[in-house]
Length: 330
Image 1 (cartoon, rainbow, N blue to C red):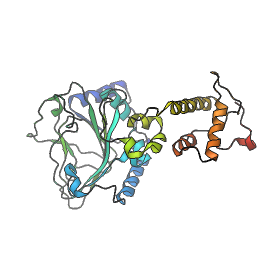
Image 2: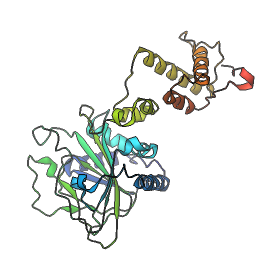
Image 3: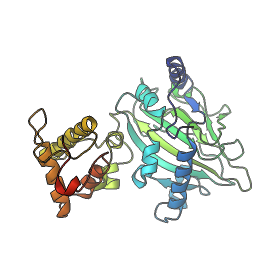
Image 4: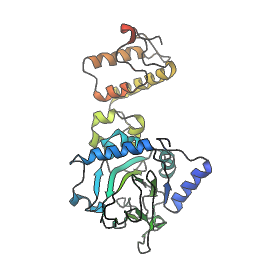
């Protein structure tokens, strides 16, 4: 299975999934997490377990429970988690559900431990003070099964169609969403739900939680504050957009971004990122001189690490001009 999941095979399948999400409040995307990505996510989780500062203390876990392991702010902690937030078919479903330009609201790892009682029923948009039901969804959540989710080990439980009423009722028994490893539960932020009880003697139920919001909602996690400017500058365009930090800092920053876009266009056309020093593009911009300036700044230690990383990621970029200083023909 592809590492990047898959888009719905037909437009009819896409519309069916979207319709069920609106009407029932949740859908399960079965087996969409490829083996390579799943292994990478599990590896990153194990790395973070060893960081005492990353894991929430029991007294601060609230809804997560005292026998569960909870790690917040995954997006800021690893490129592997950032890559996962764009897994197909989530982007196209979320654009249709929340509106184009949707943002990442929050990201976390939660592992329900043996003996953990069921969470209290809740919604994920409870902080948004608007009359309910909302005219359109503003929050959507995903729960990723890093292992099999069963009724015994604490699989997510939902109250179908509870997002359609002003005061959801948790009296009826919930529906337990059992999932195979590598599947994703996508649900409406107003849907009443909870993590079920883990009644096993020793089975852990690890899962990832990526929450998204409409463009006009302020995310719970502020990636600029969590990551810092240099790390934010090094994000690719898709990550910057999802994190809500795709602005320019100043006119000089805007000019650098425009120069980078021109270089990307040049690479796409010519297959390399080494325009001659004298190269001028069709609009009269001295792109060759700009490339030379970036190399000079780097050699003198004057180029920020964020810009260094973004240039280094470009296909065909070289910090030293080939052939002893002579650039390739443009």
